[in-house]
Image 1 (cartoon, one colour):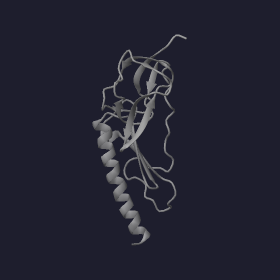
Image 2: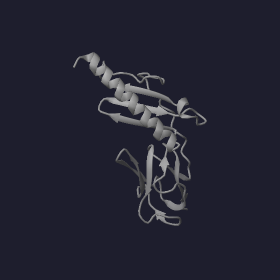
Image 3: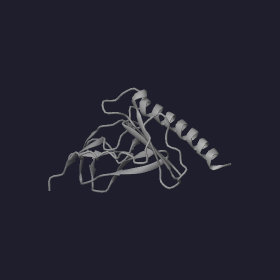
Image 4: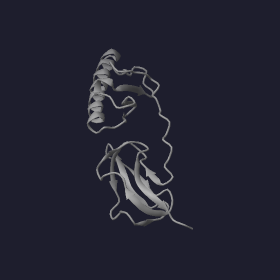
Length: 164
């Protein structure tokens, strides 16, 4: 195959991937979703205020290959927008990633936790990102449902500080 054929195949795969990601973004009411496969990185971001799938912007970026094909139709660029991280809630535990959240076994309101204790995990494309207690305290409220789709920086658990 020639480079031109490779570009056509890449463009088709990226367009298909963007369509699948856009459907998931809409179905699970996420703000953004990102996938990395090899050197290809595709991020689909919903516009502020939550719009229809037609209003979703996508940016595809490839690290190294000079013949990578950018996304078609939607906004495509080599510079991917990196939103400013949300301000952490001093009384809360935030999601470290976009994915599906699961609580640690036995976690519930009233349970005491120490800094670094596992509180659960966010699963992103089969990869678990641990959620650990940022400080010692008592679990006040479990904000999200087990198995719920969560966004980066979303409040997962309200954690009440322990008086020293």
